[in-house]
Image (cartoon, rainbow, N blue to C red; front, side):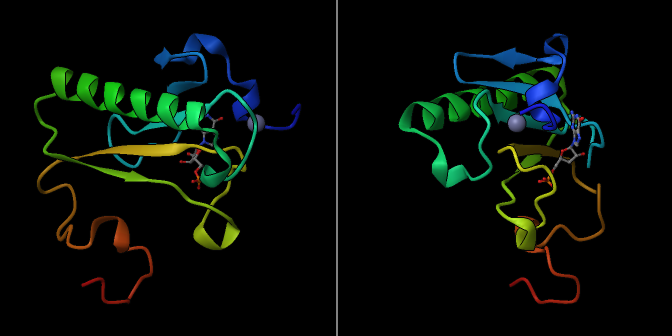
Length: 124
Ligand code: 5GP
Ligand code: ZN
């Protein structure tokens, strides 16, 4: 896929990889350490992943989370999320799992976490 940014990332930017997926830092991080776990195969929708890809993606998600925690003791929690489809906010149509470190006080009220996606809507 010549036009796809994630098919054309420079491999020197990979933080971790396995046979089916890799990890890079987000170019526009929500918080310090915001990473993306991306399959090597080009497809847009999490639910189109094979069993092997599901396992490979989750293995890297866990490994990156553990590496972040080991190297940064200011991290208190994480948001993990996948945007599927334009209506859900997806802008790059090559699957990626967002791994977003969170620190106490990084926003006034974190209540709702990944559920707080529609401004003004109650999330609990
Ligand atoms: P989406 O809105 O599709 O879930 O998220 C796309 C993400 O990809 C955004 O967080 C954006 O900052 C990130 N992104 C877009 N282009 C690039 C790029 O060229 N390199 C990297 N590392 N991240 C990118
Ligand atoms: Zn792609």
